Length: 161
Ligand code: ADP
Ligand code: MG
Image (cartoon, rainbow, N blue to C red):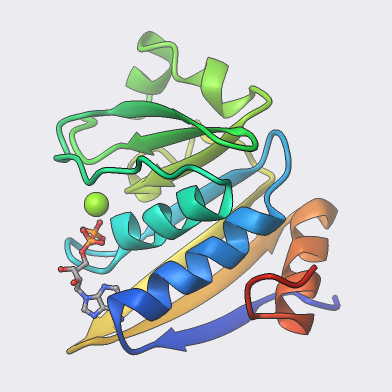
């Protein structure tokens, strides 16, 4: 039951990217990070930080109609955005499970639209917003992600492992 959940608050997009960078630095092959939060919550902002943490320098913001983007850093980053998904089965129809169960790092925006199909072991990040404040609730499922939360709890600042 140690490290079962972590709550972090940020007060600017920079701080959110910083948190993402730290997560990206800790990410390992096959990791699945699920993001849940309303439009404008900061899912893409956090993902940008994760990309930086993976050593991806050419991250550009893209519109939500792209369902999957592949970027290359220390590990591949598969950035999925399920905003336009009509039913979870589409994940299989589109072959997205190859990425979800692959050896890159998968970050899934609007993960609540596909929860039935998404991997059971994951790091779920719920984001709520008030003004410029963003509250992140990090919920690990599985021992691997509990360890990740443990490392984040110990050293929430980037550049330390
Ligand atoms: P989503 O992908 O969840 O729809 P985005 O990351 O695209 O959200 O957008 C978040 C918006 O909120 C951006 O316009 C950003 O500038 C703004 N913002 C304000 N404060 C924060 C914060 N603390 N963290 C992240 N984004 C913030
Ligand atoms: Mg987004």
